[in-house]
Image (cartoon, rainbow, N blue to C red; front, side):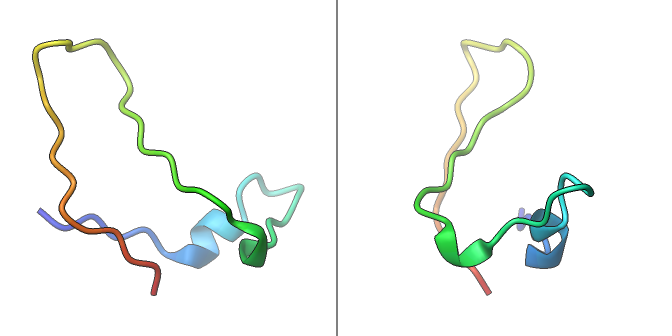
Length: 48
């Protein structure tokens, strides 16, 4: 599965404050909910 999130969508959230994408220092992946027996495998992250 490939998940794509447009950078413009990230920069414009929240709507009242524009994010400067040049200052991104880290990317954090999190999941909503509790499922301690499930795993997430991340093979590649790229900003395009």
